[in-house]
Image (cartoon, rainbow, N blue to C red; front, side, top):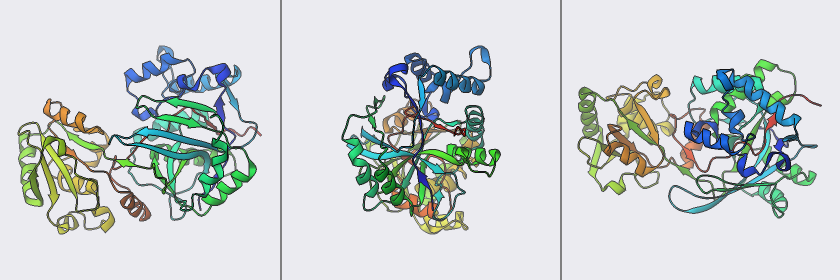
Length: 424
């Protein structure tokens, strides 16, 4: 079983550091250079300074981040909680589909475990580059700076019920991000509430939704420090119930560039051979959500024809992926990767991992414009991966292709940190 516990958080003292609106940032892996500059300019205590560090004069960015954390504590801008607590998080957002929703969860510390049944599951493949970066940052700062986003089953809503009283008062912090999402954070230190949440999560298996690289970094760091007990055996997570009505998954579209005439011809042959093709309007490139046969939209810069491609026969994927499970072969992203990306387009897993010839877009209009404007040769438009497929593949101990899921909204960085130093 996964172990979920309250934590003695490191959190900003807003009287000293300023309001949380100026301190929080998105997760490091969605920040480009321009946004990093804007975030850094908001406050010298903005989380981007430590989570995506840049040292003056080209020095060691990881040592610079560690020095900043120590300085923030020394000046009182960052303080350590006197006793363990859970931190309810409420996110009011409008998704990419235009619908307004509310998602509720809580921040806690979770014991670092090997992936496995009844404990913690992954659902997407990871790449070595981000893990090495995060490990070097963790070694230097000895802290979890950005929470992992994970899911657990709580059909009775016991954790939400236990934490609800803490959310009746004014929040500890409130942030409105660039997408218009309002994030509200409370502190819940009532022993009975904590006991109820720990009990509710005790039988649960945790499914990592976002932050696979951070979790595998936490495992690597825990192993480095040693088998003895201590804060290094735990990691910061935001937990949301699978049954939460505000939990949504959106797609990430695949863009391809630098294709050769030979690859373009081979792709056209594969599409005609393995898929039923239907011409659709440009606004209908993204197929409707559902559990039907693998399907995706297709648009290329030459013909500019919007097509919907539906797999003709499951046997085609069975032949291409003979050792894969039925759950894996049902994934749109797996079918696309096996039959088209890795086949006629010659995108190996290594090329995919390094975005060599491949790009991603989560906005339908952006993806369409990148193709029609000539920045990319073509795009495959995907529908959301249903949660039952995510759970089925994860339960088999199998990981999906990268970017198979897009959980929105992200959990901000900088609301609080988790120290990995034994300070008792």
